[in-house]
Every structure is written in structure tokens, then in C-alpha cells.
Length: 107
Image (cartoon, rainbow, N blue to C red; front, top):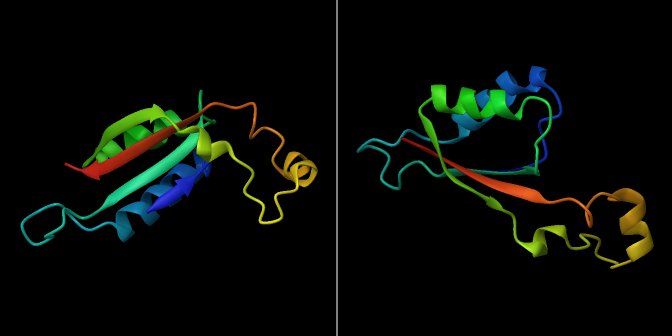
């Protein structure tokens, strides 16, 4: 499961936790592949609710196995047209923000 910058306030934490835990299987012998991973990208320093989300994931049996600065290609212009002015208009913080990549797996 991949998610980017979805937590803007603490109120969303229970809903996102429910979605992730519902989509990822358990990590026992019945799961085979270990149940998958949840990849989350957020601005360095996070948003309101990120620490609560990490704690909620841990309480559901997930471990944050990776917390790294996201690669530069995560900040490239996502527009098919490649128009830099449109990119700045819609994603102005993209080029100036450092993003962190989190990976969660069930323990």
C-alpha cells in the first residue's frame, strides 16, 4: 500500500489506520508473503498527527522498518506535460521540501 502526505490532522489517524490494517494481511504462517508493506511519504517534520499515526500503527502490530529521506525523484514534476509553471502552481512546495519515506511491516 502506498500513501503520500495523507495526514494533515490528528482526526484522520483512526481512519487511515483502519484502511491500512484492513488492506494488509497478518504476518503469520498463513500469510505466505508476510502480508505486504505500507509505504508512506510525508514532509520532513511531518504534519499534525504523524507521531500519533506511527504510534497507532505500532499498537496494531506494525513496525516502522524504514525511515529515510525520500529520493530526489520523489520531488520531480509529476505532470505528464512537464510544464514547470503548472507544476509550481499546483505543487509549489515540491521542489523546496524534504520528504521522508516510512515503511511499515507487521511484526
